[in-house]
Length: 217
Image (cartoon, rainbow, N blue to C red):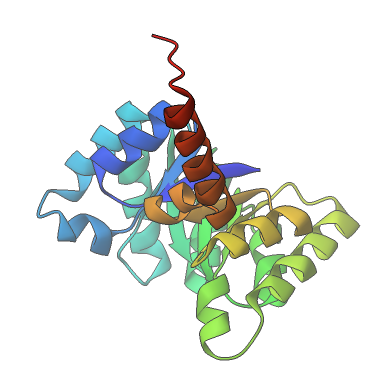
């Protein structure tokens, strides 16, 4: 399973990239705006930093303007993925831009029907939002499982990019279900290394080493 980092924080991306935990990046205009920097400038910097796909989102709502914005974003770097909303206009733009050879991430997916339409429109990635479904008492992981079944039934190449990841358990469950990619904040990905028993065992190990006076260097 591939790990994408959901952030516009270049330092956080660099840290995970150096660790080998960054296969790509997802970002959006709101995340970049928080940095106080230009959207195109930050996107270019991220694309130069990582080898994998970098999702850059359009801000328009009508298909024609989405297509124009998508073409402009695609000029930033070869690894840009154009991020479009799952609306009829977004799917229309997806069909056009995908036919031109651009990679597309269709976002804001909340149903299997939506995911099926995105695949038929030529989406490279579909982004179901797990956490936001959980917020309204619908199990977001069930959606990942449904999409996996449908895509496998018909051999769609669209990759399932599980988004709105809130916990490390979301990540492990997505891996078991068969999501192709997860995108999560840097702190959630780093938290995967944590376990209370690891900490407890390390504390005991350090105490034993000190008591025995063992040194390697």
